[in-house]
Length: 419
Image (tube, rainbow, N blue to C red; front, side, top):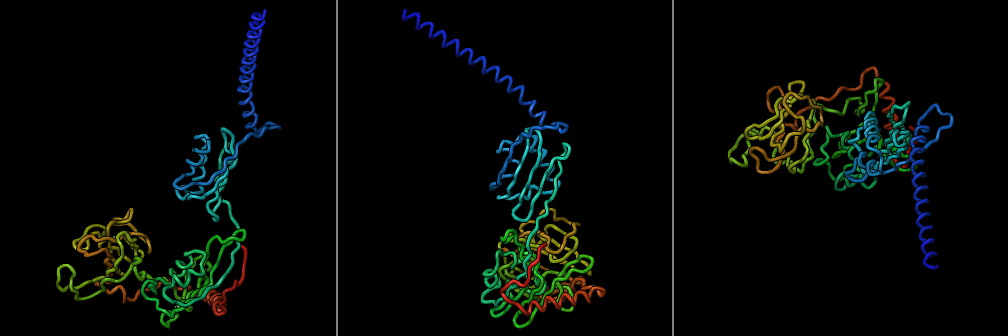
């Protein structure tokens, strides 16, 4: 009797388990049939009662990680990633993505509803769906522009004097670029020199974002004052000028690279370090580590880029008004540098090396004017276009306001505006 009861109980358990499997199978089939209907109903824009089913993906790019890879790790379908990145590329170059960039994606399994990409604190981009099409756009950001001032004296270097007051080295670079046609800040500054400037800072939500323009600046070099005023004319052209309206820009830079020292100057008779004979040295040698970037000192067209005996790998550039500059002993050329290519002032053309006859890494920089070599450090270089006569009165009015503010220089904020 007990045996039979035990057998009936086993049969009931097996029967119950089979019923459970049957119900579970039927429920799974119904769910599979129901899911496409929900998605279809959600995507039907004519449905008066749509069901909004979507996933939110948020992420921050890691080091050496692209947006594509980050989205893939989040589980976003590949076809959606392709659509998104190709559309976003219309507004933003994805090669400029950096670690820390943040994004938010709202999407269904087969459509993108909204995408936002935040690049640092300065740039924001959006992708939105429009009638099954995607459109990318730049989102304008509003910053608070605060105009500040700074002054100081040189104890050892401009860098050490300014970095104490700077949020980033960016301001120091902006300052040196204003005067780079007249002052070599690596070799010329002396203890006791002074500087002062008025500049813009951009803030967002009370936090520093970046520096704007330097509105006015002044550097006193061994007693000689170099003033600079930023002016934008009615055509939109913006440049730095001295107090008379003459552009601070010159046809050629003071030097075509950042260097450690001048190892050899221009000379009509110099003892050659290798051949031990006296011969002319038609250029200036700038000692610098191998790989130091070399830029074009002025606008022009590359006359020659190749090998020249003695100078090794060399670039020659033809400039307006009969000037030709050459850059010798390069370790390699910059990308796309070849004969016939047009380059602009400050464009990268190559890197310091020891090719040709050289005892160490340096740049041999030469200048020809009217077919004759001239000393690059002593030549008189023509300036860029001055302020037009029609705009001179407007320039003088704005110049006077900036110089007045410069003379009232304090460490406090001068004024603030919203841009």
